[in-house]
Length: 186
Image (cartoon, rainbow, N blue to C red; front, top):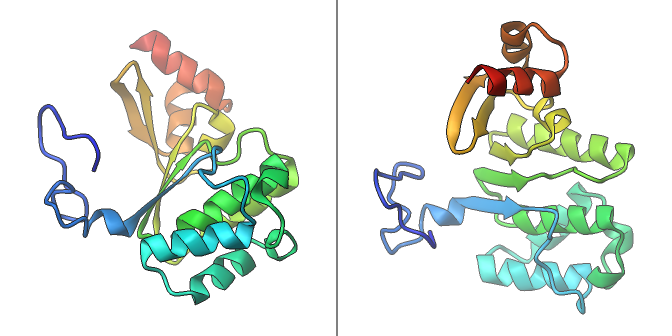
């Protein structure tokens, strides 16, 4: 909602996100490796601040702390957390208002395998509950965990297909190689 399109039409849940009501934007959340939280506050304090900004009920803080297993970190300063814990706290912030559309920017890049597995399990649980997750990443390992792919290069759509369709189309099991073959063919 911050930038207006230069051409075309944008619809978010059937509404113009620039209509002044912010109704459509309230149904969206964003999470990235940069968790956008105050380093001087505890995880719990940060989440309470964001819950009040989102208009989320106080119980939402406990719900997301439990859902992302942040109980042991709730009273820790955000700045004292490991990168993985910060990532989970940032995801908790994004889930406070129970978004229908969750935009994730490279959600598990640089994290240890156990945390990556746990976060992808959480993402799949959210999707199974009806949320739409949009994952933006240049890491094909993350792409392999998604149901559908939209592959872009320099602003152009190279393909829109599933990971298995991409493998079959490019005749390779390796998604990095598959992407490179699409780039070379375009």
